[in-house]
View 1 (cartoon, one colour):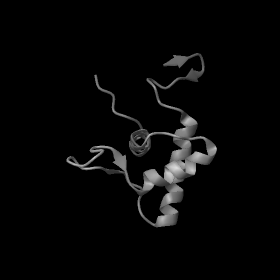
View 2: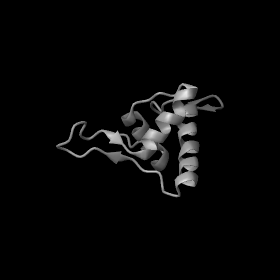
View 3: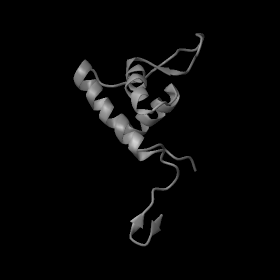
View 4: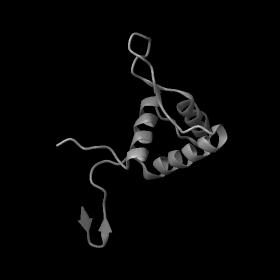
Length: 92
């Protein structure tokens, strides 16, 4: 949407500053671990099935706690996906 000289993103994009922080932390995670940041999912048949988990999620939870960023693992996973893809695909 365009308002005067301002451009407003379409739809809810989340808090841009938190998304920027997550992107920066993903870069730091890669430098520390030398692994590409990824999200694991608990397999079906196990307690907490289909929930996001893994070292990157735990890293973000630990790094975010002192600065007040406390999101659910699934929220972190969704934002990570958005960062990687440039935004969520919108259904028509």
